[in-house]
Image (tube, rainbow, N blue to C red; front, side, top):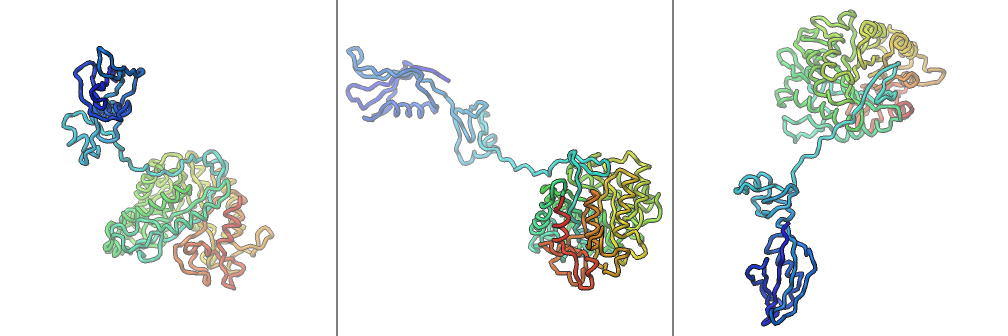
Length: 528
């Protein structure tokens, strides 16, 4: 700030002519204006000084005297020789009060201002700084397990929702209705990366209905060979032709999975990533593989798969890891610790933990009967008490594929939960259940009622889960628009409205009636 005395003179010969005496120096002619007053004089001073100012003491008007034939106005001016600048400024303080601003078109970016417009080395960019919007992050969560319960942020919770399907065999069926936005105008190297917004909205709409104490959940079945880009037509890879047609198809698959996870977890939905298949050449390996499948064909290593997947999602607290879908292997040692051919549960657990730390939930499936085995889970827990945040899995299907396995019944499932709870404090999560081929005369040892109430087998399983604090996701929401209710196959919630989760009612199959997903969800998914 600079303070000085400024005198404005009005010549007596022509009162319209004004003169300015800066600080007692020579007079400067300001021009004539018969209406000019203090405000216009002030504006002229601002213009001449390129600065703002204020009157620091009262103005004094002096009439003409014998010694001074002209009238004059005597002011003390406090002037700032700088002004706020919102562009490229020069001689600026830290708050962008600058001696001058540069409005030239070629100086309207930070790079221009500090580059070609800064020949004097005194420029400062005072314009808006372009910043990209922060990337949204899913909610943070702290997970613990104790006394058969799963806790999120210290509160007991269960998970309910559904598994999806088609992501486990997607790359050999690119043309089918899928979870990716089918837009054939997209570039071939970015064809399948974006989720279908209508399907995403439909699933999130359902999951928003969960009551307090329930975390909404979606399970994504995955194929390790897709993720790891292991495919050779010479080895019988079913998606080799698609990989030749669409560049970086494996990378596109990864992007789709990442985008599905991002959209669901941003909505507060927990996502279970399931190693469903090592490759899609063999539909169901008896255990996760390391290098080759049962046909001797090179495949993606489950160890490498989990190392990559867990590193990718390590910062997302709502992602959970289901190490292998449905083991059905005879050797406990191989299932638990692995061998040259198979990846063991402990091997996969360790590689996940190395990347995600102790907070993330890891699901371990039972050794036998396609993930329906309490004994192996209890033994693993007793031999490895230091395993953190693990949840035990089970798939209580009952139908013709389970003939001769009487434990796969409603009572058998209830007994399995009792056995797990008696032998371990770990929570239980059934990541698949539901029937599509179980008629009244095929549901082994299920009489059509549970606890004295007439209900389907599927409803009986849901009743047991809700009563025992067991988490569940039935199989499965398929993005097909077809109506499969006449045959109850495939097991799927079809299309956008989710009205046809094909879970057979069991006691009414002769009429071709499948379980109504809306009814199942409203009666069991949305109730505390």
